[in-house]
Picture (cartoon, helix red, strand yellow):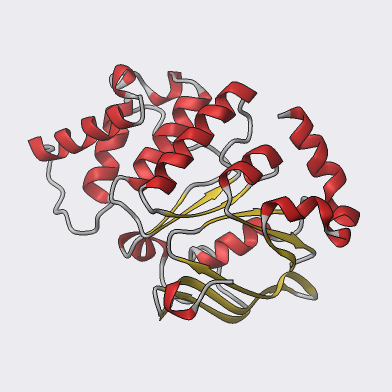
Length: 256
């Protein structure tokens, strides 16, 4: 558990109900600046809904979400991005009919919330975009259409586009889904670089090798509740986690 002074994101009794169904059921969670927190749990546990509540895509039914000390329960997602909360999604998105560089330029110009967009990109926009693509190993394919690049490169572009404005916190939903083992290793290294920069990272992941390697702290959800919050190494020793999740998680870990 983080200290109050270090807390960057806090959820207080956060819930989301759909009729009688509690998709998220009274979650209390505090995440400190610089932490890397991995969220696991069986399908249907409420993980993505929880992310939607944090990032403003879905309104909470009860409770409160605070970011950097301020309530954000009714803040629009684009405003949260401008305030320093970036997020990626399970489906690796991008503008497929645009090039890698054009996608990156779109994030550079429109992502800050401070730019006045015109018909032409400025040299400083191009410099930032190309430097970022170089950092993430994408400069060689800058001229290719996003629809033509590999899944790994699309995921790397999604990360690069999300972090180009140096967010305070970065949320990723199943970042290594669909990747091969060697590609997962490359993505682990990418996440480690972000951690070394001091970025706060919160991610949902079923691939246990990725979760236990990247996360400093693991959280497991089941039926909308948190059933574990502690060291990743302790997951396999927790009886409740083993009974509701570890079987499928262990298969994922073995497959990775």
